[in-house]
Amino acid sequence: MKINFVKEVLKSGGHVIGSEVSRLPSSEVPNIYAAAGLDFVFIDMEHTPFNLETVAALIRAARQEQIVPIVRVPQAEYAFVCRVLDAGAQGIIVPRVNTPQTVRELVSWMRYPPHGIRGFACTAAQTDGQAVGLETFMKAANEETLLVIQIERVEAMSHLDEMLSIEGVDVACLGYMDLTIDMGYPGQIDHPDVVAAVDRIIETANANGVAPGIISPEMNVLEHWVSRGMRFISYATDAILLQTAAISSEQQLRSICRQTNLAPSQNMASANN
Image 1 (cartoon, rainbow, N blue to C red):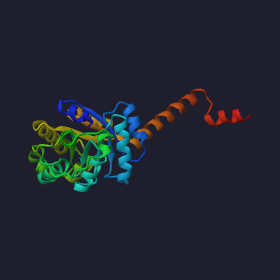
Image 2 (cartoon, helix red, strand yellow; image 1 turned 90 degrees about the vertical axis):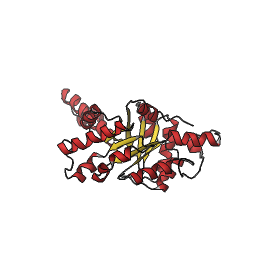
Image 3 (cartoon, rainbow, N blue to C red; image 1 turned 120 degrees about the horizontal axis):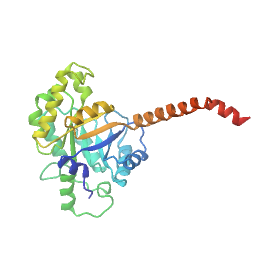
Image 4 (cartoon, helix red, strand yellow; image 1 turned 60 degrees about the vertical axis):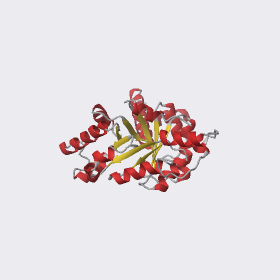
């Protein structure tokens, strides 16, 4: 059974960084993220059309490349949680977690008896095809699986202390766009009430041994909140990273062409003559 080094680093007080797969359902994406040195790949099922077969292939590619696969399920339901874990996910992200009861259910669904109610399935996807004893497998699955809950609603803020005190929560991840919308300040991450709410998430998480986390496509937002204590950090998506690189390359090449006073189309015409 693989050690979940993301969970280990967070437990030690360190930072982990990853990026999302949301547009390009190719096994090459986890490979590229691993080669870039990222700690985890965040596979999204909430805002994508990805089915379980696609997600399972992405998980398999990530495990082969020694990068931790973490799946955001569409919502807090046993079937979603159990199936992605059986497919080999080493962690789950759950959106819109608003009550202590939901947290307790999530912890129970993720763990085998006597610590939970997860149905048994020792799949090759979880063991990477290796023979593993029953007790060893169940113990490792219970201990190594990461639980990330997203704080995205005012209701969640009202239950924050109790939710984060429940054993089994590893990361309290800010869903800042949804939270600002629910607070009545859409997108206003710098609004004093929003800043106070996020600071409270960080403080409450730290007080309970839970890592504060954030998902954002904006580097300046990440820089600000990492400096204030965020440690589970997911930046951008596969499509955003590709688009950013394409724009940067295009701008550099246009600049090179301008410096030579010869546009690419003129170069092509000259070559054809």
